[in-house]
Image (cartoon, rainbow over the protein chains, first blue to last red):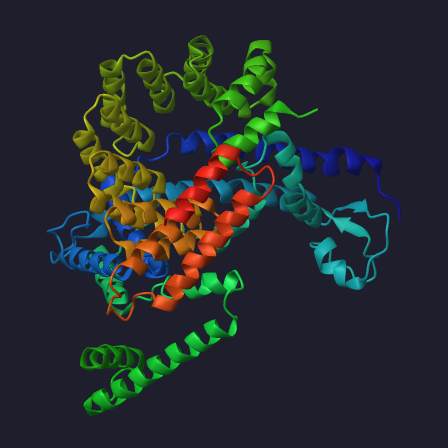
Length: 310
Length: 279
């Protein structure tokens, strides 16, 4: 089988050129549409940072002494309870109005829609164009043999059983370009370009799922109730026990310099575990009166109770 | 041959402030115009060299860089902040303050401008105002450990040690692996006469950075003071036996460190030995 050179000149190369050009135009339009980035709001920044602060205290509290940890714990618990860090500290219990009337929310929605459209429209148009004019065309012959498995990938739109797999159909050429032109775009537009075809795929798969949601929106697109998050975080914080990393630092140092055998550290650890398990045992007996409640909450509560009684 | 653009880029990435190196590498780049071949990076180099030039007092170079940036990005907050720094460098503090204020009025979340404002207040000799501004800034930008460090310094200047200790605790949580911060915290604790806690922090310093001389001195100081004091009944306190071992260890390491050939000048060696003997 031979291919007409006119196919190369009038189909194969034009498809590629059109795809490159569309990619470049899309990059420029995206840059235009993005325009000025939205200004961050001081109060919402403070809100998220407060949560971060609590997380850091829970994760890295080992590095500060006991008294410092407890002072912070008490302060943050109180602040979260009262909602000091909330955007609107007093709006806690007010029912929220319709989200569609919140201009900030609508704006983020519109932004996401615009970006999605920018991604999907050009690809749909090109695919339609190829399907309409060149469906059933065979454009390229690959210079190497391939197994039959590749037939679906390379001969889409040409449903013949006995054609060799190394022939590529027009629609498959489109897909090869869609994924293969990444590095060409990087070369032309620099890294971080917006002509990314992979992004289209993502946009298509998450279309309508509100993937453009802002930081304070749940996946379903509803703004979250920050006060509830704060209260949850407060509970987490209160369940965190302080364990100071420097409790046996002297011994560790002496072991490090070889003044004490390393087994000392191991003995200390064992003693600590024994102490902790003893504490747990008392906690168990103390809370035996409590009837079974949802597992983790009950365990945590009994632990707290036990500690108070020990 | 080292590529100056590459070195500058590495310095930017590691946020090191080596103004002399930056100016010596960046000045020829900018004056020969080779900087423009760096494309998008060129403007970062301009900014970097401008700040470095202000640091070393090369006002002409700074002016050139900032002017170039101004023509490229007219009205940008980042460039205006550089202009504010330039005004600060020549001592026009009030005018610089105006610039920062204008930037913050447009965008209240501008971190660079709010930081400059704090430093401006400090430079004007208004530490309590600087503290208030910095506290407000840290309430929002909690994770900025450099801000906490700066606040600790300000409190130390005001002799407010417990507040400074608080700031250092925040720094320790944000940057737990840096022994210098542990050392600073230990020294604040020692000044507050919290010897037991200071000893633990000094131990941490030496644990993180082997044979840290200042940390060893701290251990030696704390251990000998605790040995002289009446033994504490507190269960969390270091045992007498451990204290003696620590004291011995610190002395031994210090003698070894100072005794190493070429480690220290003869005079400091003599002074160190004398001090150890008196303890």
